[in-house]
Amino acid sequence: EADIYQTPRYLVIGTGKKITLECSQTMGHDKMYWYQQDPGMELHLIHYSYGVNSTEKGDLSSESTVSRIRTEHFPLTLESARPSHTSQYLCASSEFWRGQETQYFGPGTRLLVL
Amino acid sequence: AQTVTQSQPEMSVQEAETVTLSCTYDTSESDYYLFWYKQPPSRQMILVIRQEAYKQQNATENRFSVNFQKAAKSFSLKISDSQLGDAAMYFCAYISGAGSYQLTFGKGTKLSVIP
Image (cartoon, rainbow over all chains, first blue to last red):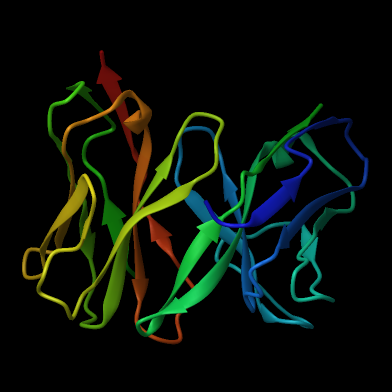
């Protein structure tokens, strides 16, 4: 398994709270990603980063924000959590392989907003 | 836009037997890459196998192999000698050639392994 870590693994929080989901990798990968996955469903990209100080939104609209101040660290923040944010959030980083990136995933954070 | 279809929401296999999971995709591009990921219950998603579209030879990784049919846009995963630890959700994924960031996932196939 890849060296990519996410904390917390599980989070139950009340509506209106600010939360930050942590993601870090020790592989020196430049590119990192955040996905949202509802139970039993496919993954949808919400943010990605090509490197330090580079962040872009993915195809799935999200009220979350991200930052990339250090190569190894790519946190995701929700300023005011709502029940609609309840989901699993997966972080990934990628390595270049034969012309394209291969993504490796962290263990995920399961978020429940009450 | 590219789409990935996994037509089998659930499958089961007897331990030590062989099972094939199907995946089809729709694209107009000639340069792309395909992946199979495994997501065990409450555990990390891991890469199982990957294939470049420009390669005719099917990728293999130990008990896992693919049947890549480019003209048919099909990318099935064969698991030989199934083990209890193979029970998981399996996702097929597609990405365009160099420069693309967007991995497109299928909806997944839940594989159960019967002892």
